[in-house]
Length: 111
Length: 463
Image (cartoon, rainbow over all chains, first blue to last red; front, side, top):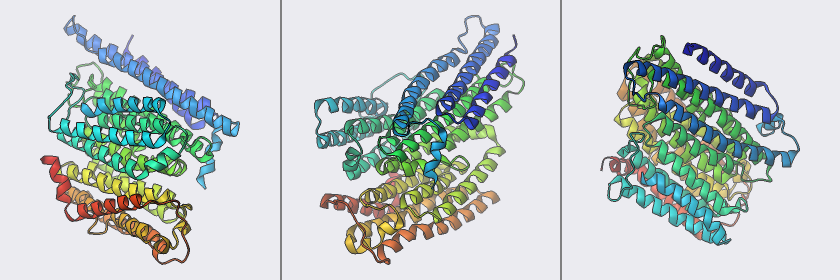
């Protein structure tokens, strides 16, 4: 299967994530959209890593080119988990004080 | 490597310090000693007296520039803790944890100053940002602080997503995360690999502009700096922002070639928009804290000059600028947290009630505005000189615009002076100890000293 399909899928997921962040009003859903963006990147990295590996494999059967892309995915997962723990704590703190998770709350500071 | 390891260890140590004692003063002193130790260990690393050797497989390159920046950042943090430590421990119930988070931020900063791999850059940015989200929301009952934390968090992780997309595209084009390695063209069967790399670098660049709050990605900055507890916003807009610029310099001094002509055009627009937005909006602010937030956007515009001019002078200049800007802003905020009313009216008549505070505040303001005999003057001078050195008509235009906006900034900075010295009123100041005043006085002396002999700071870079 050509790598192009994976790139298109990853870009589509990433765009859905961005559109979600920009349009949705519920903090939790915005947060989920950000996670979607990160996961689109994971998919893309794995696809590229496979692509580079395949190109190198044709030249040299013992090549390990492309493994670092997959390693990067693990780091993204760990960091995303750390971000989730901090982010949900912030959202919970907000909910305790305002009893709402609506993003319109963010406009209060403007003036 | 020393700074990265020891700052993380010191963070853990302070976490346990809260279990050993509940006395906040002791915790603050432990943090000061830990910072001193961190500073010494980084200096020892710089001159290879005592280095923890780790085989990083070329993921890090420890240059003199990065290590010297580490020392400056740690020293600035030390000054910041010495001046505002009492305010930090007053923010909430978890004094030790705030210092812990500050140490973790320093760990991220020391990664950012010497990465050689996009993976390490990503980790450095995250290690630096995630503690900041918590520090922003540390006043848990304060709605403004909550809001700032949520906004900073959402914007920050959104920009992380964009950064990661950029890294993934660069990886797709070049097959490596190493920033020094250039991949052979056409090796991977992708047709548009160079285009992919350009798009990837542009995404990384815009994500980094988010982090350093340069226009057009500055929207979060005033709200977040305004909403978070004052002590922490001074930390966020000085040391952290400077580290963002060092990361940009580390990456784009190497990668700018891939962008070719596009890089200068893009940066030209970004610098002008940042200067205009930062300076013009700052004029209309009534709250000093919010004005400082906008002025920090304007100062980011000046620091971007170092990216436009890629040469030796700009490397010296960014160090000098970071120091001058950090010292002055930390000083202004140390006074601001003591004043009850953050608006300009709150400063009315400060010269009568607290002549000493008004005097040092005036020196800090002079330095930010770039008046000669203060550090800020030579900082701006080096930035403009670096751009002139690269030459080109666009460079000259940039320098002229820079000078004009430096003059505009004088107008709003001097509103503080006007309030302190010429307006009637009695500014209310919370408990100011003699030691605090002497500390501020020493800081002001340092700024004047750097302003007269900027070489003392820069020579260490080569020495």
